Amino acid sequence: MKFWFILLVIIIILFGLFILINIIYNKFQDYIIKINEVDGKIDEALRNKYDIILKLNNIIK
Image 1 (tube, rainbow, N blue to C red):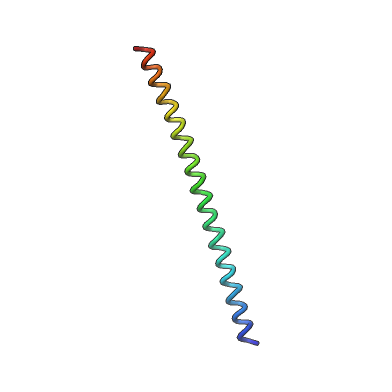
Image 2: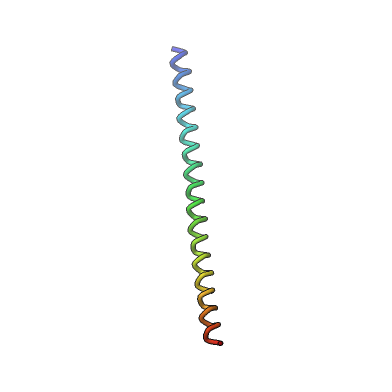
């Protein structure tokens, strides 16, 4: 009886650790996705400003 109880406690602890690691991993993946989205938006904004500067440069010349 004692052996089964100890085994059950170990299985529950391992399952809890697995769930905790999975939650942490998913949060990191969410952060990576958000960083990549922001990076794309910044890149697009800089590209648009560069295009505007080129157009204005051609108009001024």
